Length: 153
Image 1 (tube, rainbow, N blue to C red):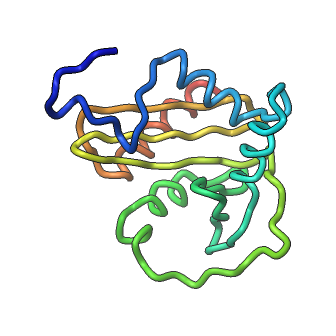
Image 2: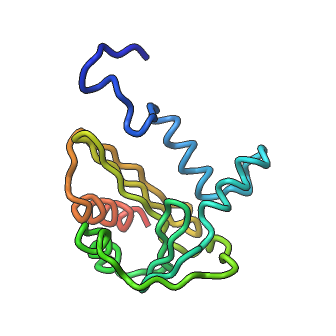
């Protein structure tokens, strides 16, 4: 895709993708065992392993995970910048625990006025990718995703 110089020419942290790309990506993350490429499968498994435990949340490599079923308020309130940027006591999980299918796995992101949110529950084979051309507060994105996925169950 060719984009003229300006606000839309720089990818969000180096990524340009399509709806098809994002669908394949979230499907791969929900069930890495289906990946034929061993390196990609291992990368997904390593990223979703549980390395740190902070309250109800486990931290992977980029991913945050909460055991399913989970209370909506735990996810929504935990995504607020006041919590996400706070110094919270963390307990190392050593050795790291493997990914748990009964988990709410998620990640917020924003850059340059754009916002995104990805969440999925591997056990339910249910997930969502939200992309916005505005950087809405994390709790608003998380609550919208929760409400959508709740209706799809």
